[in-house]
Length: 133
View 1: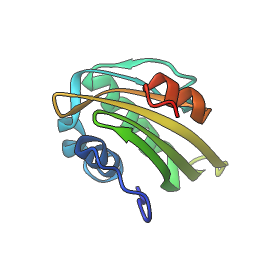
View 2: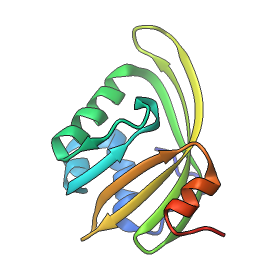
View 3: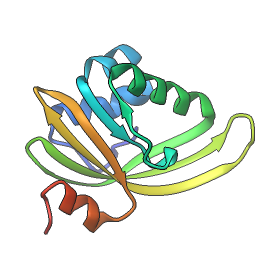
View 4: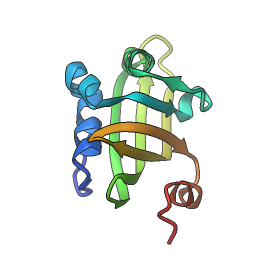
């Protein structure tokens, strides 16, 4: 995940973002046992628990051949983080191209990611995280 000009201060989220693409073991270590993940590409279907989160990660990485993930903005306060994520990708089998932006809301507990909800709108994500401007 490219973080060319945007830096996440929260260590768990920063490491999670890197590990998502690069290291399955590190990714798993950063998941709280009570992780709840509502990804935008799965129509916000709940993935609950470490095994489900690992399956979601594996499925995502297996679906896309070429992909690029860039953080464009981060708003955070301690263990609450909202990151504007920009994904461009091409499907391995279909060749379908996607170009999507969403606001990932992270919550950290005990140094591990315990909650992720991918919001379409910035204001909604910030309100949900208690970071409304």
